[in-house]
Length: 344
Image (cartoon, rainbow, N blue to C red; front, side, top):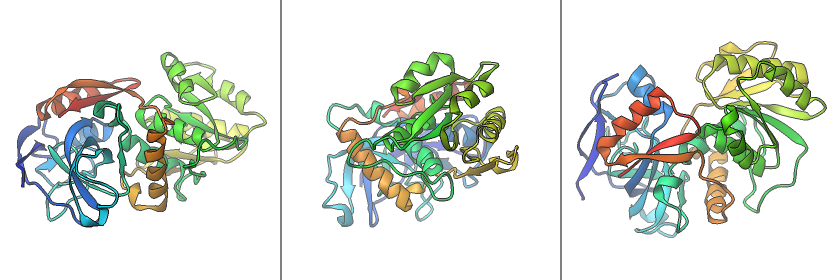
C-alpha cells in the first residue's frame, strides 16, 4: 500500500491543522480509491474547525470536495472505472470505516463511494471540476428530495422544456446556490435569483431569468411584483442568513403559490414565519438515495456534454496539504462568488 498523508485536526476547535501520516484504506464494495489532485474548502469545514459543530471524534480529517486520479477499484466497479480515470467525488468526512477517516477529502488518498463519483472530461482541470461535488449534493437535497421541495430532477437527455413554474433561489452566487440554479434551470424551472449586484451577470449566465440585489431596500416588494401571476413552487435558501429566511417567508406569503422554503441551515425549521413552512436537508450523503443516484448520473453526462459550468470560479490558494489551513482561514474571513481550492 502507498504511504498516505493527511491534514489532521487534532482536537475540537484547534486553531491549526497539522500534516502527518494517515492510513491507506482499500476500497470495499461499490468503492474506489483516488490519489488526490485538488480539494475545495467549504463553509462546513470552517464550521467544524472554528465552531466545533458536526464532529466529535478527534483527531479528525475534514474535507468534502475532492478531485483526483483513480488508483484502486473494487471488483464491483471494474466495469465502470479503471485506474487512471480522472474523477470528482463527494467526500464523507462525517463517516468512518473501521475507525478511519478514509472518506475525508483532505488527504493524499481518498475512498469514494458510488454514486457520488463522476468522470472529469479531458481538458477540464481538477481545480475547476472540484468546485462541484458538495454544491451539487447540497442543492439536490434541497431542491429534489421528497422531504424538501420535491422538484423534478433534470433529464439526462437534455434541457427540459419550460414547465411554467418558478423557484426563488436566495444566495444564487454561492457554491450551493450556483449548482441549484443550474440544476433547476436544466430541469425546466424558471429561476429567480437573489445575490449581490456585482454577481448578477454570473447568476444569469447560469440560467436565472432575472436576479435581484440582496441589498436593495425594495427587494421584497420587487420580487413579489415579479412573481405576481406566476406558479411559484417554493424557495431555496442557499446561504446562512436569518434575514433571508424572513424575507423568503414574506415573499411566499404575499405572492401565493407554494409556501415552502428549503434551507441549508440546520435548525432553520424553527425560524418559519407568515405561515410558510421551512424544511432542511443539510446532508452530503444524498448519494445513497434515489435522488442522489439520478443527480450524479445526470452530472456525469452534464460534464461530458458541456451542459454545466464549473461555478463559482475556483481560486487556487496554493499547492500542498499544508495550504489547506490557509484556505479555511481565508474562507472564514469571507469570500464572494468564488470557491477556494488547494492543489495537491
